[in-house]
Length: 81
Image (cartoon, rainbow, N blue to C red; front, side, top):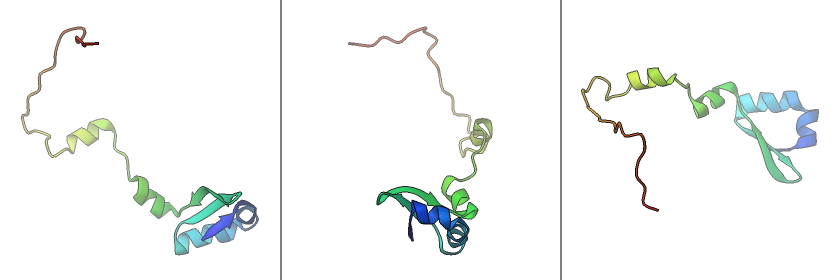
């Protein structure tokens, strides 16, 4: 459902309940999309849980695969301009 900003402010409780029951609720300002109200569950599905980088690497399918990479030890790379 689309809500005009002034209606969303006046009926915030209803807006939040509808977001929980019926899904995302759009808010417009001067007829243009401005915001969307989501339930916490929908938001969590959208953004997912973010892992610390070290944990992300540890859970990688390549963790422990003995892949070797070599890093250049030169202080700079040469670039053709």
